[in-house]
Image 1 (cartoon, rainbow, N blue to C red):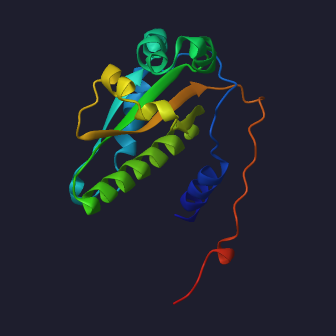
Image 2 (image 1 turned 60 degrees about the vertical axis):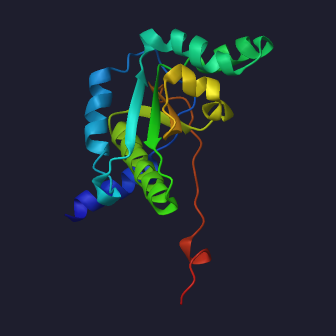
Length: 185
């Protein structure tokens, strides 16, 4: 069991958000479904499974950018936004079921966030890069309308997904020693 725990620890520490340096290799829907089938084993109160997903493959990417993303920007910014997102091979929109009760809303958000972390770790293990993005336009009603998001749903993330050039430097991360953030009662 110790070896497994070490590999989990290493995976957590080694995973990086991949924002650029994607290679044009197809991200297959079957792989995303397989990763999600494992990721959804995240803890979730009452087994509500408060998430759903919208996968945008490379062959649907142009329509997604035009119909969902560019609709949120004035024409003068279209080229800039096109250039920003066109090199991303695939996207996954993660949608959470909301709840008017604060406790349940918080539990749903925590569960969905846990599931997203599982997904990113599982993808990293398969040499698939992801970046959890929350750009301002994911809050725009036009984006919601284009993706047919219901009134009782909230977009939690627009994951950028793709295989990447492993020679492209990915910044190393550091973390504050927990002793600096830990207090005792």
